[in-house]
Image (cartoon, rainbow, N blue to C red; front, side, top):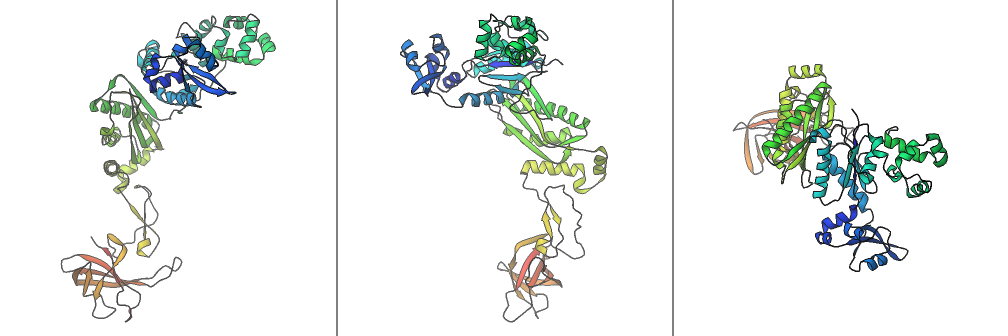
Length: 499
């Protein structure tokens, strides 16, 4: 596929921005100024001021002599690069690859994009229309190379060079269209070399001997004889799908249709590559410049369209279309391999490994929040508080097995709560105990089970645990701390409750 580039030139970038912020400036001539050697010098002029003969570099006093009512605003250092960066990011709606082209331009790699707008004419017209609606004066052109597009945007009478015809489009343009510095342009003009066709007709070795390789390189780049790289402001993600809209979308139904179409394309690609997504972002680009978006996460790699659509649908209501969404973007931000053989093992397995269970957990996390679901794994410790640990993710596996040779409660109190106990003799289980003001009569008891503290972690008294059941059938896990002595009467604790 022949590559195509669009160059967008903002001849009044900074003043257009000020006019957007202060609409009253649109009707008066004004300039931006900065101090240079104790004099105020014009750094940018609006179209009205330019028509009066005021240009960047003019001393402000001389400019006001031309027009006494001229308004002057302080220039903001670094404003133009910041504006170009933001506008380039905004241009992502037209192509995945948008780059700044200082001092006053944007470069788009439009390869394979124009047909989505119905052709290159409609594509360029939409770019100009939307930027004009945002208050910017622009010239835009399209060609096979960044250099040719740059030249046509600033010096050309036509705004589209047909594929393979950039040389014919460049020939009548001035040599400055090759992105040469001012001194080089003056040198060429003094020698009578004023147009690109004159440089094209010169022998390249002679051109190199006389002027060095700078002019030749710019000419080769503009003609497509030498590759020229583009550094996008947002490097295109490897797994992303885009859907531009002919008319802005303002309804939930339209958003759902766009999401489903993007998911079908993205998941088909993931399935073909044996991969699945673990996280994804769905974003809408509104006509007012806002970019509302939602994100989802999954417990394991998946390319199941219905499942991912359901996860997103739980959050779609948070996307406010306002005046309309003109572009939808779906990106798989985290992708992992998904082996078909492993998929068959998952389908044959039970528990968390089963796909339907994993998808249920994904839906619960999407509805309730990612931090509301917890899973615990066994740890190699005897001390009850350290016998488990939280899993880093719901599907994490471990080589340690849960110990099931001894009864353990489903819920542990942290920290254990002190209880008052009545026991016939010190080493016997309690007959009664009081917890939080409620008296419990013990009808069944089992124990004691002695658990010693782990000496390599820290010392302390041992614990004698008992399993108790009260008169209404509730079961408790209590312990006595250390050896019984007459001085230590408050040494019983409730540590957990059985299901």
